[in-house]
Every structure is written in C-alpha cells, then in structure tokens.
Image 1 (cartoon, rainbow, N blue to C red):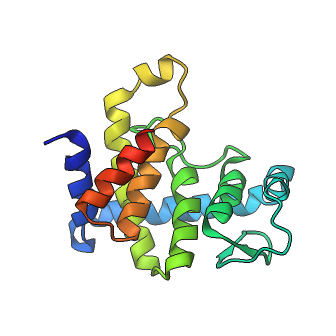
Image 2 (tube, rainbow, N blue to C red):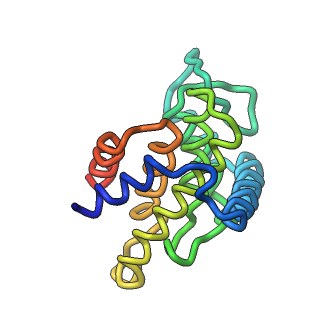
Image 3 (tube, helix red, strand yellow):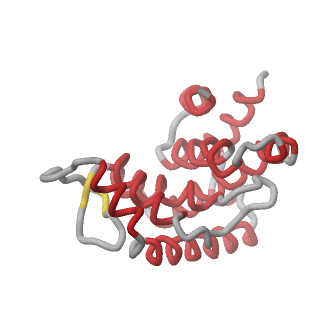
Length: 185
C-alpha cells in the first residue's frame, strides 16, 4: 500500500473521539490566532487587491470575505481570506511542517464549511486532521526541503489543506487519495 493510500485512510476515518484533548485545544488556539491575524490583515491593501483582481463585480456566493459584508464563491473567498491571513506574517507556525499551517488551512476550511454547512466542531476536527497531515509530510521533507529554497507553507501546506478539506467534505478513501494526488500536481 502506498503512502498516499495510507494517509487517505487516516484522513477519511478519523473521528472526534480519536483526537487527544490537547490536540483539540491547540487547534482552537491556532484557529483563534489565525482568525485574529486574518482580521488584522484585512486592513492591508493586499486582500483588497486580490479581490479586485478576481473581477467579481456583481458576483455573489455563500462565503464571507472577512472584514467586509461581501459574500462570494468558496474558491475566491478562500483565496482572498488566505491573502489576509498571511499578509502580516504573524500567523502561527508548525515546526513539524516548517511553515504557516493555519494560514493555509483556515481560509480553505472557512470557505468549504460555509459552502457545505459544516459545524464548528467539524471545522475543528478537520483543522486537526490537516495539521497532522502537514506535520507528517513536513517531517519527511524538512529541513532539506527548506534548505533547497522551498517554502513549506505552500509546498507542504497544500497537502495539509487538501487533507483538512477532504475530511470536512467527508470524502471516502479513494476520493481522499485522488485529492492528494491532485495536490501533488
């Protein structure tokens, strides 16, 4: 069995009872920290420029652009909120991943959660799943990965966000494996 299949099985089958209380507590702290960084980042020019570049005049959707009253599609909201989350570079880091894990996870989960009616409890579990996936992959590639000039927030974070959203959307093992393969590309 390949690594992607093993990771997909873990992503698809994790339940609330599988998560240690300490992991849940730290996910709450990370989410609160990232939300605060995102709200602070909303006042920067970068998220406004990102939103303007999408040329969404008159386009509406289910997902809130933080710091505004604007609702747009999930992918666009994840992008704009992601810019706001990371623009000030105060967001949390994960040593195992070697990057800013929640700045990648939170905007994707926030958008997917709004678009699909997820509960806060499910968002919290999905965040924990994403952090764990990012940490496991980060441990295998770092520090050599970073030493060669790669930025794990993007290169490892894509797997963390994929794992988190796959879990939140309740993808089965085969679908999770496919999602991870797409993230690789």
